[in-house]
Amino acid sequence: MPPNGGMKFDVIIYDSIGMEYTEESAETGALGGSELEVTILAEELSRRGKSVLVENRHQQPNDQICPSGAIYRKLGSETPLQTKTLVVMRYSKPPRHIVADKTVVWLHDIPSHDGRGNLVGEHQHLQGVDATFVCVSRWQAELFPKTFNKHVIPNMLPAWNYDLQPQVRIPGRFHYASGAMKGLNKTIALWRNFREKMKSRGLRQHPELHVFTPAWSPVEASGEVESGVIFHGPVSPTHAFLSELSKSEGMFYVNELPENFCISAAQTELFGGRVHVLCVNGEGGIRDTLSHPEWITTDPGQFEEGFFAALRKNPKVTGLRFHPETVLRYWLDVLS
Image (cartoon, rainbow, N blue to C red; front, side, top):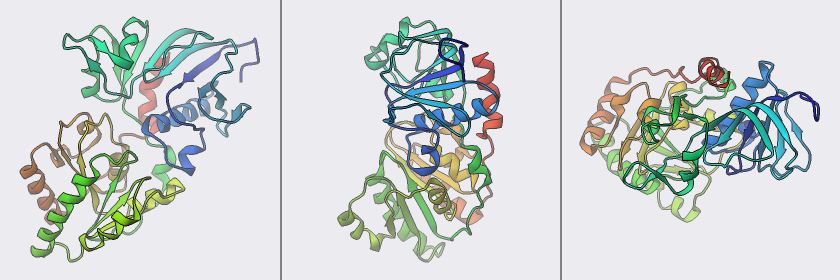
């Protein structure tokens, strides 16, 4: 840790937009995707000897020093700081109290345009920022101006995810997992249809869709039991949630909004599950996440054909591309 008024931090990550979180949040509760990625990057850099400070919305009055050595500080202190590299999250404006040799903007959102390629809305100010821009998918990178110095670095899964022992897979069990409840109603409606076809074709006797989402209604849940939909609500800690995911044959998901990167899809593949996604308004960057892109489509007929073909073949899937040891090499190049 650099002493006050002394050495520079190697990396400061500034997040004025995300929720409250520290390093421990990744294991104890649900996090948004961008917040989770900050915890992984800060932890992995700290474990490699880098001095890392994260300024975000966490509510503790004092600095939180995490087991990895990363420091989390509450926004608003305005204490002058120096760093070799400032990583600005999403569309946060670079803060005046941090002096950096180099600025990196880590883009996790989808920008809006004015029809002439110019950014508008919350991303508009980025057009005047002298920075390196990191996108999480090739699709997302194409949405930002060509004049940006862009790098594509995929999201990481926490290293401890790779150490978890998958549970015994239950035939006929699938899951939907989204903190934002994206496409939930359409997913359930399509599941009802597919469930009857599975039963009539003798592929699965009692197929179930297990729904993991922080927001759910007991009234809605009680009406779905006959359709084989099981509402779990939030499952904590995170390793218990992942244990539940690993019991499924795979993920069943109708996505209404284009994804940059679907973390629950990557986790599903990590445990050997299949990921079937019907994209209503374009595929987005989720194709970059999956090792079997043939199971993602915008065509309902193709989605159904692929789903039932996979049920008959039961192909093997493993997801190893998003381990920190792999992804961090790209980050170290950008941060240097």
